[in-house]
Length: 318
Image (cartoon, rainbow, N blue to C red; front, side, top):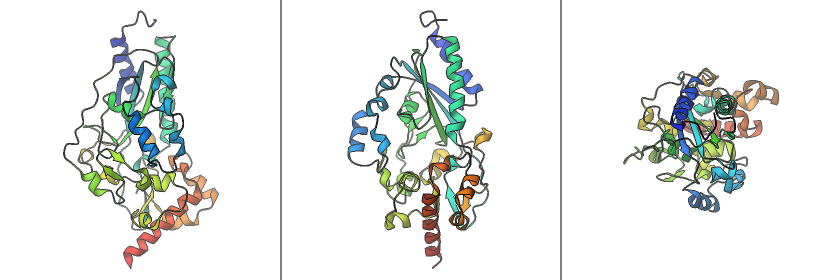
């Protein structure tokens, strides 16, 4: 089958069916046109709101135009997996870990499945070129997911789906096959401001705008230097990442549990004992976090976070 003889509507239907067979909960198709947020993103970077994430400044043209990242790109197949899992009661000495990091490293779980889907597509259309992306590639994945109908970008800047909520891990396949795009997601945040009101550091500066420098997820994962005392005090007991703006979102209150076994929590309470973390040596760090996305943070930074959690806990007791 060639691109000149293919029934693209039938192929798009088959792509979605194959994606679901591979375990993806949501799948949609976006066109590969340039980002409509290019100027906003440039200003966001220039204002310093990316903090120390210098990698976000790199490959700007590729990041804001899929056809620059994959020459000849016509479509982007967007997928999402629900990672919500039940947690046991949280102990008082626990440092909280964001839910997405409780299971296996999502990069290592999703990327092979995307490659399988891309290989399947290439078998159908041999001349097709493709690139797979999960998080680290220069791709505006939230915008593309919204454009593909996976959901909409909420006021907390997370992708929200009316059936699954925001507990979503995203992936993309950029392809030179011109597939019919899906309708974009419809913003259903309405007048709700719960995520904005609940953010303890004021990182959501206004609806749909995030200052990463204040975000607890950024502070505990990407920021490697010492954390300013006024921000550290408001981190409460978050050891790695933060889920506050998702926990309070009405769309997440009845979200179904995810089915992919790889994302079942390795720490049943969703927490780690901060005193134990403070006592870890490199060997224990590697053993406890083998195959986890938490290894994004090296031991000294994780122990910095643990000290902050312990200090915040002691302050509450006094």
